[in-house]
Image 1 (cartoon, rainbow, N blue to C red):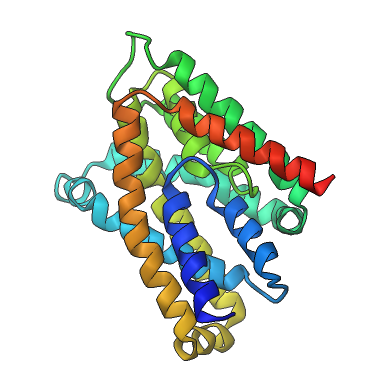
Image 2 (tube, rainbow, N blue to C red):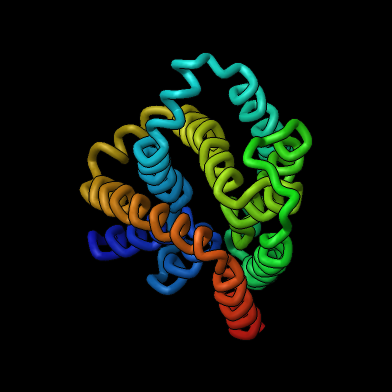
Length: 256
């Protein structure tokens, strides 16, 4: 992978990881466009690690508050919401990996994301909404996060949409969604590094492309978070649904 390819991959990852348009789908598209046929999963996870760092920086006050106040309920909800994704990864990991080489399936999953975002838009004006995450909403969001292991289904999109549908205000769903991403991404990164052993660490340290890609992903990720929150405040989440609909349809047409 060249430096140019790493830079573009990092930019795509950073901008799309937090916008509800599926970063994995875009990375699959970028890899195919560049003709990258080798092992890219570890590189993709490294990019996710960079955007994980962006989440922790952006939500540093929220994370600090949880620990300072020893908010056991918040920690419990995050753990509860993480369990479905972990279980799905352990049980269906091989089948999930197959999706990364099947553009038609990725396109179909983008249409699922679009549907979720349109649904979120329809409930966004309901008045009976809460600013606090409840046990029920934590479970619902956790289950939808498990489906986001499939490329094309946006993790941020379906988790925020499901939180809104369960009665949580958009900005609260936004906050919980990204706090929930911390253990999932960190766990995926740790698992992959352990499974690859010394090869993984050597590959990372010896490749300037990895460092460049991660740096770009981190900075673009911060920008993506700010932009997404701005769109939510404007109550225009449907715009991302339109994008996913168009991109998913295009991929399906090209794949056919």
